[in-house]
Amino acid sequence: MVEAVKARSLEETPTWAVAVVCFVMVLISIIIEHIIHLIGKWLKKRRKRALYEALEKIKSELMLLGFMSLLLTIGQGPISEICVPKSVGATWHPCKKQEKDPSEDENGGSDKCAEKGKVSLVSADGITQLNIFIFVLAAFHVLCCIITLTLSRAKACTMRKWKKWEIETTTYNYQFSHDPERFRFARETSFGRRHLNFWARSPILLWIVCFFRQFLRSVPKVDYLTLRHGFITAHLAPRSQTKFDFQTYIKRSLEEDFKVVVGISPTIWFFAVLFLLFNTYGEPKSVILSVSTKLQVVITQMGLRIQGTQVVQGTPVVQPGDDLFWFNHPRLLLYLINFVLFQNAFQFAFFAWTWYEFGLKSCFHKYPEDLILRITMWAIIQFFCSYVTLPLYALVTQMGTTMRPTIFNERLAKALRTWHHTAKQHVKQNRHSGTVTPTTSAPGTPSHTISPVHPLHDYRGESDGIQASLRS
Image 1 (cartoon, one colour):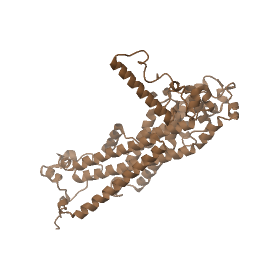
Image 2 (cartoon, rainbow, N blue to C red):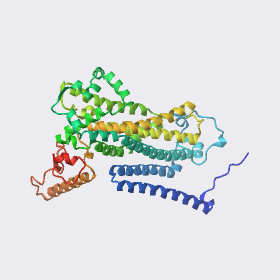
Image 3 (cartoon, one colour):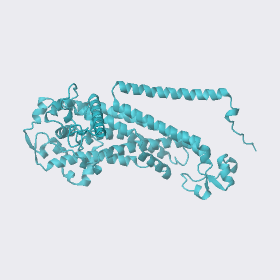
Image 4 (cartoon, rainbow, N blue to C red):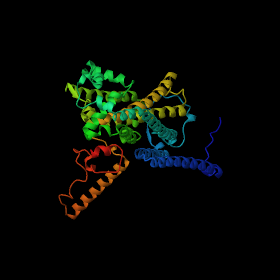
């Protein structure tokens, strides 16, 4: 019988070995930190404020995961010494318990529990494995964020055809074919022929058709131009039809949405704990397909609204409204996209971790076809969510009741924030001094019922398209 060899502590370890390990860890950390700093510096130089804030959010999420890992490391001893009855410790196992030789049993905290006829809440080895899982989750979260941004930017490159459509709206041919003095039946317009069909009257058929449309050409030219026209009619001056750059506005909105997508809210952490508790893989594909289908349904429902007018003048004017979305909350769809992307990263991180820790023949990977299916579904969901659903969301949710702050470019948005902050400070000071006048007590921000472009009617010096509409 071979006697167990006790592991060496730091006091029995050569100092050169400790120094080498510390040097390597510090060097890797400095390199990673420097790369992140360079990326942030580049984003600032390119004036990508939204993407820079997304990078800061990723850094904060990594710091949170680092704190979790640190707490697990510090609490490894105390946690492993928490004892529970064997009947409780024998429940909810992800795998069937295998017979083990008592000589292989653990040391440390688990021995103390064994002396009491109990088992550890989580063994020291289990905490070490959980620590590794947190590291893998952090790595895959960053990887999936990079993939999401890359695919979204790739989609933005394909939006060049949207840019061509924007340029087309300034031509005389477009203005002639969409003459506001021209009357047509709603069904005779290109938008009407696409959406006002027999299947649009049945909720079941409507969802079925929209489900398959998301796999084809999700945003055709007629839909883009009609949504553009409806947005400008609802929020901007009439003469903005040939001056406002709707495509640039969508790209800015997409970058702003990315800040939400990369975040991990407490609600998402709660679901992550539930995944671990029930050992389930969830159904991210069902959620993301439902979101994409709903976005297509919203476009068709806007078409059904104009059907009641029978005759339209010029381009069909769709009516934006929050009531088109679930619970009158368009951003709920963005939170669902965020949930799906994190769940997808979580599941693949769990797959990679179990592969590394327990091998491919463990109870987590019983069938080879299961492995292929999981990897394939992860890739498909990541691609579809980043390349199709997120850009489609950035377009369709502009049809809400209110206009988003990305309507303004960076300089104008910064001026607005400064003006808003200064106005609030003046109101606060006047209230404290007791010299509030009707003028000074005016709210520091415009009313929500007034479009935010009105207070800047006389603003000059920008050429981003919106300023042209303000002056008109």
